Image (cartoon, rainbow, N blue to C red; front, side):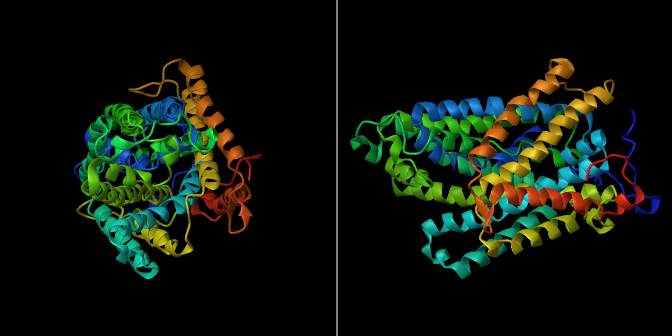
Amino acid sequence: MSAPADWVSPSPEAALPTKAPTVARLRTWPLVAATYFLVCGGTYGTEQIVGGAGYGVGILILLLTPVLWSLPAALMIGELASMMPAEGGFYAWVRRAMGNFWGFQEAWLSLMASIFDMAIYPTLFVIYLSRLFPWFADEGRGVLVGVAMIAVCTALNVAGIRVVALTSEWFFFLIVSPFIAIAVLAPFKAGQLAAMPAADGFGRVDLIGGILIAMWNYMGWDNASTIAAEVDRPQRTYPRAMLLAVSLVALTYVIPVSAMWLTDLPASAWEEGSWVAMAEMVGGPALRVALALGGAISAFGMFNALVMSYSRLPLAMAQDGMLPRVFARRHPRTGAPWVAILACSIGWAACLGLGFERLVTIDILLYGLSLTLEFVALVVLRIKEPTAPRPFRVPGGTLGTVLLGVPPALLLGFSIVRSQREEVFGINGIVAGLLLIVAGCAAFWLTPISRRARPRHGEPC
């Protein structure tokens, strides 16, 4: 088993242990719960899909998207995590397949995308709380509450990966319960639904917009790979957990929407945030409160799980000599990379005041390129290391691994072209994304490892 020619290990004095201290490791269901929050965090966010495409087509989108978008990613993660259950996950895979430069770009793209992701969850947390307690709507209080939420998530992550997984399991039941109530009550046209007019077939927004939102709601499977070194028997656990998580996410999207289809609520009534109103129609004020609290819990749970995932990137990069050694420090009792967790949390807290929204163009561009590198790594490792142990393999041989990445790549290209009208600080979203990509190329040459390993002739950027 050979490493790429430009894969130079850190110097002996910089070498650090690559495994966490002996602590309790995640098994299948805790990993499924954590993955659930890394990807979706509940049924919230599906309203615009129905509003754009109508009930029938909306449900079809929610069923086909995981097949074309999520399942390929889950299969790719299953093979690579079973072959190489390393700290840093997708970063480690790309680095092993294509060398230091591309490994750095993989981590850079993910961390840059996190800037546009992580600032929204404290904001959503405050928005849902404000639906119940208008006191939180004051802008100054909202920022303080957001910072407090980040501080609590930071503390939970420093307490260890088992604490994060355990909270994810409890949060899962808390946010799913109101939607189970909707799924049970809605077909009987309970509450205010009894007097609704006949439902129309289509909504008010375009079909393509619904597809883009569905892609967003099914995005982020590879985030679960960064904690592979802290998972019990990852060679067996990852393939099983990924397939279970894909099924669970799809069911929590499709079942409540299908139940509402059986009512006479028009599809045109669906808009962002309307689940709270529909909960009151079905189950009265109590269910409305439960769903609003579930929204706050969902935002908290997603941020909490993503801190766990993203913080492993600086840890793994420090272990490889790409970042200062301090980022590889672990808590002596929990094994958590506390310096990386603290540094990431401070960075995300600083972004709260910028008022970022979910910018689909730039986020999908950065995430899409990082996901593409992962599929390329899958193919490269099949070719370069065909005999490496792989307890789980993508079926179809090397050709199967090539074809596996085709549907996600087509969807990514389509979504980028479709949503290119967004702007970031007055700059076109795609242009802003390209500038960040170029910055990643430049940033690599500032790393300690690039000064020890000069590029091969013809290596890009």
